[in-house]
Image: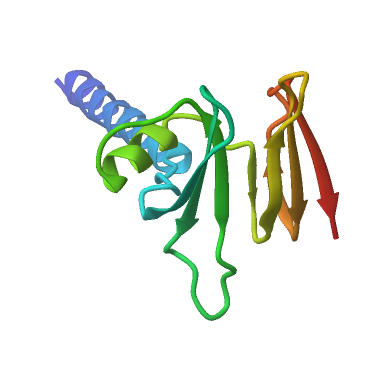
Length: 135
């Protein structure tokens, strides 16, 4: 009888330990959506098929810089909130605390972007984008 009681308590302890491990793993790996509070700032048509969208994070404050995200994509339809939701599924070309002073499509179809300011992230997967960063 004491052996069965010990087995039951060991089983309960192992089950609680595994549950704590799963909850701890989920809690450590949980990442909130940092783009949830973004707002559409501007949109520019660069060519017939290419648009530049600019969103601004509303999470900034007195001690946190305002973060701007710049996306290159085709034309998006819908309300501003719907467009931001569509953009948040993609990856921004530039994410930072600066601004784009010039964006244009050259005769070869490449996109030239001139950016000034602090860059937080830069996506290099756009093969047809040439970026000039001024500090």
